[in-house]
Length: 394
Ligand SMILES: Cc1ncc(COP(=O)(O)O)c(C=O)c1O
Image (tube, rainbow, N blue to C red):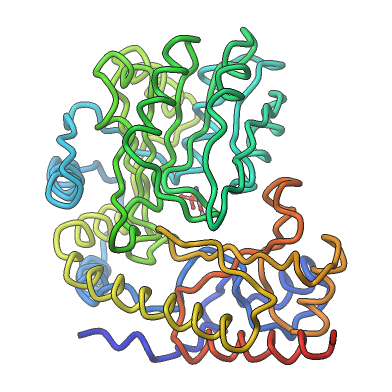
């Protein structure tokens, strides 16, 4: 049993979330309780650490290849956990999901082409598109009661522009926590197929779906022909909290796309793995399931706690119904503050670091994203700070 209640001191392990220089740069002060980076405060599964220590003790760190057992571990995980049979020949690897997305944008579009995103959405998509001199094409999600839905009519319109070459699908969706349903994904597939748009499915949060919700890998629910126009980015980084020691498996059904991907990784000499990423990923996928089951239960407990706290003590702040991920999307619009005022309020009055909603697109103004992958005591500390700050407004 893992004790998820223990708060570990990360101040000596170069954590991006706790880094005071980064906090000061992004928020103007460094004395904040941080909930802004999408990693967790928990130790990785003990079995992953044991395999890493064993590998470290071997003491030889020369060039390596990826063993067939690695792709076996990836495909077995998706088969057992999500009922997806991945053809192992279709798996390639990248340094991380954003590294893959940046490469895929380069491979599958030209400067000036459009790349569609569905804001509010993970802001690094926009950064990657802009950095490649492509145009950001927005297909905003629609707030619909307690949650969000896709605007498929608008998607059809955006995809039908011949300049639109790619859709980046976030499944499940960061930051709003939707776990897309099978028929939604199929309709996205039909639209993109009709207009020759490649779907990059970012499924890094796929292992986090709460009871009553089901994660469907995009490529597993669309027709074979539609899947040929997709690339799925997987990762154990979030699932097992191993972002700094893993690579990402990338599933590329189309042989020509695989060829392009290989040419790219050779060209930039990023085709070789690191010893530790191979070991961490394989151990996590092979032996990490019991740990993940415990983690999901703990996170559900955090959601129940958060929901109760908001309802009882900060009813002005509304939780957008979470279906998956370990991120929650909080609606602060009843406080009547504009985007910058809300940010300043959270920083200077509540002294908590959340990801401001507008970072995810202007549709996110009035909202903020909070990571709940932390001990309940830390979550409670953050919520109490927020409660005190909200009381000062009345
Ligand atoms: C949706 C999404 N994609 C990609 C990433 C980053 O993945 P990586 O570190 O593998 O580049 C994150 C991290 O927060 C994320 O939430």
